[in-house]
Length: 462
Image (cartoon, rainbow, N blue to C red):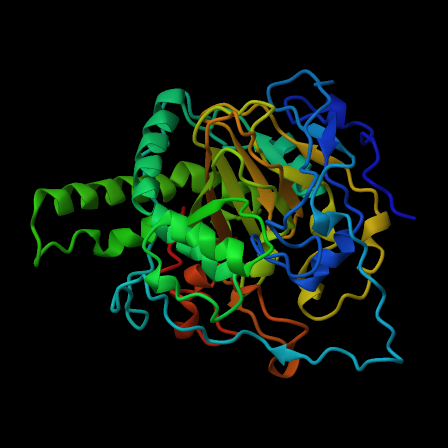
């Protein structure tokens, strides 16, 4: 029997103000949450609920407005007919008598260095590994509390795998950050479309470098893929700051202004005020010398009419052997209930974790767990949501009559995490290649099993 997300509120949660409170709205079915174990990425429907962007004739609907009181209220989402194909179609059981077990793969392949990153950008042999966190958002301002999160926030995150923290930034701070990030993202729109082509189209079907326009990219996807474009993704503007100031060959005003814009964005992304939230949710102990590294940043754009983002977990695309991983998600404009915010499967982070890389034992019946399906909307400028690396999440289509939805996603991990490896160098599968454009910057320099310390993975807290 498939359980489609029960309307259930955990005892005592409603009394934990000011922590988020659950309420019910509508989300996609979790009929094949189990299939998320097949390793789908954000934008490629490679076999079930762990993927993003699969075309659907019935988009995820929004509804239900029985909102609980409280500024950090979560929205509980009841499964409905809406949602992704990947979340509806139950995968057939494999008959071990008819076919051999899947062959194990090498832990993580060494991808080619990202062609969009200038050679020599990083010197991984000798580099300054001190904290690169910025104070562009002042840590000692009168409105900034001594702790970034409350005990209730941290308990909620531990139990649910996600939490909403309100008013992390003032409206003026958030507005300044949004203007800078949206401006830089627009400069990279074609690159974001090329990334969609590289993810959604079969390998070798399209010469991605030859694409000259957004229209060409969409035509290629329409021709070679049955996937729906759910979002555009711009990686790691903050890393471009390594080379933004190199103006020796071209000291034009345009280059200078562009460099300043990239530096401004890097300051926001590497903010210690944001990283402190990640540190507290990860349980970092400064007295023990714990440090937090920035794994990657992305600006996600959902233009009007773009499709849903299917169920997936971020850690499925991270070649690190760790559970201490968290993503902060900040809207770059106020989001209303009709906007495509993130939707979470509460408690799923406890089912998808390190064993995932080695075995699916114990994950066969995830579809019957009856996860609470929750979200947080509306979200204002300065609010953020945080979710654990293994927490399954989803996002609906962006309505045709709504403006584009921009959001900054910043991922962090606790220092000391090692590059993924397995017993005898083998795992059940390798991390999904969708984020190879990002982890390709450092993976070639860090050996399997070694601590992931690299200038592309800077310490940002404390």
